[in-house]
Image 1 (cartoon, protein in one colour):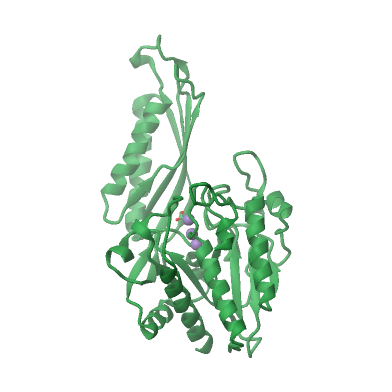
Image 2 (cartoon, rainbow, N blue to C red):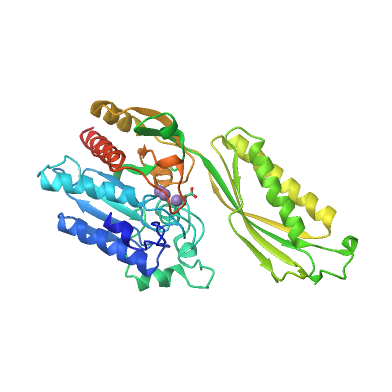
Length: 392
Ligand code: HGY
Ligand code: MN
Ligand code: MN
Ligand code: MN
C-alpha cells in the first residue's frame, strides 16, 4: 500500500489531513498510476479528481468508483485509501487484460471526506452533488486560519471543471466497515443498504473567568462544569435510543489555566442514528438540555447544528449482492455507521457500497487493520459489481 506510506506515522497509522502536502503527494501518485493505465484526468473546482477509462460507447454514462485519501490526524492505513486502491486494482485488471467495457469507467478521489481539518465531512462529494455551496466551502479555514482554496491551489488540485459535471450513471465505493459486525458475523462482504443520519454541532458555553481559590461555588459561572454536563448528556441521549451514537471529539477551553475558572468552552457534538425520526428526537433532547443548563447555571450556551446528513438508501446494492454471490463470498446486509462519499453520490445516481471487515472493528485509530484476502474480496466484488452495472 505505497499510498498508505505517504503520511505514515511510527505507530503504523496515517496522518494525511485534507489538502496538505502529504495529501497532494498521495493524489499525485494516484494520478500517475491512472495515467499509466491509459486514463485521462479531470480535477474539478473542489479538487475532486476523476480518472476516466473509455469504454465501447463513450456517450454512455460512466460507471464510477472512488473514495478519499485524506485521513484523521491519527488515522489508519485503510479508511478511504482502500477504496481508492480498489479502484486502481479494477483499472489495472481491465487494462492488463485488455478488457473493453461497454460504458466508460471513472475512478474518483474526493476532497476532504474526513471533515477533520476543514468541516464538515464529505465536503468534496457534498459540493459535487450540490448539497454544499462551492464558494462557501472553498472559503473554509482550518484552526490556523489557512483557507481550503489556497491549500488546494498549493498542492496543485484547485481544478477548473464544474463540480457535478461528470456523466456518471452509477457509483460504487469499497470501504472497510470500520465497525465489528462483519467480523463478529464472520462475513467476507457487507452489502450496504443504508447510510445513517448524522448531525454535527458546534457548542459554545460562555461563563465568567474568576479565581479558582477565592470564588465561592454559588457565585461561579463555570463554563467547564456546564460543558461537562452537556458532554455527559450527549452520551445519555445516545444510550437512550436503539442504534444511537453520540460523541464529543474536540474541546477548546479558555483560558485553559488550572487556577482560573474557565470562561469559555467550545466543543463539538456528533449525534447519529439510522432512523431520521429518532435522530430528530435526539436533536430536540440535546437542545432542550442546553437551554436548561443556560437557565440553571448562569452561563450562555450557543448550539449551532451546522451540518445535517439525512439517512440515505443505496439503490445499486443488488449489484454488490449479485457479485458477492457469483464469486461465492459470504455476505450480509448492513448499514453504514460512518459517513461516506457514496452516501452523497446516492443522492444523485444509483450507488452501492462494498464493505469488508476490519480487525476488532477498530478505525479512526493508527492500529486499524485488515488482511490482504479481505481486501482482495472487496476488489473482486467491486470489479464484478461495476461490470454488472456497465452491462445493464
Ligand atoms: O465521520 C465520518 O463518519 C467519516 O469518517 N467522515
Ligand atoms: Mn472513510
Ligand atoms: Mn473516516
Ligand atoms: Mn468515504
